[in-house]
Length: 215
Image 1 (cartoon, helix red, strand yellow):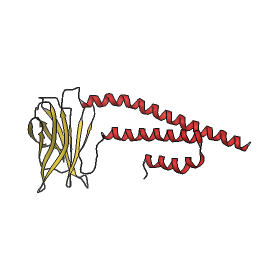
Image 2 (cartoon, one colour; image 1 turned 45 degrees about the horizontal axis):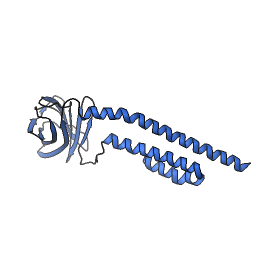
Image 3 (tube, one colour; image 1 turned 120 degrees about the horizontal axis):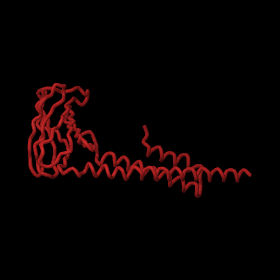
Image 4 (tube, helix red, strand yellow; image 1 turned 135 degrees about the vertical axis):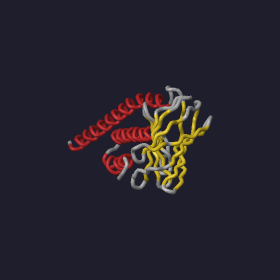
């Protein structure tokens, strides 16, 4: 399936270029360029500018929860917790499953490790739900940390990188991202509206020229 960028490129090269000239061609080209910029920036915004390849950990954040998703061999780990304030204990949930089948993996021994300005380990305890574990993240000083998990399940031992974690007061990256999103949404709407206006102008210009040529 073609991406929006590919479709827009085909439209500009295969359709518009063959029919429009002069101001009309300029207007359509500008409109397509504006839309491509919006789509590109939106994609980068949504993914944090990171490479989310299969082997790379993914971290997502909302106002109330952070999620870390990573794969190690045939195992997939999803760690969820509230934003972590300095020097406070934080409860977290961990989900372990087979990557290929999404089958929950129970009876595993999982140790979460945080390394940064200080280091600490947290041992997960299996809950009553298959593949779901609970743990408490120990109080740690403010700063940037690296998360990893050591998993022993069904005779296998796997080390999984869960990405980065920022321990900071409440006015941290989550709040900043939400504020930036409130600015970006109106900008994207206005840009798309401008692109639509340019396209409308281009087609009307082309229509007038066609009518004039017919006369």
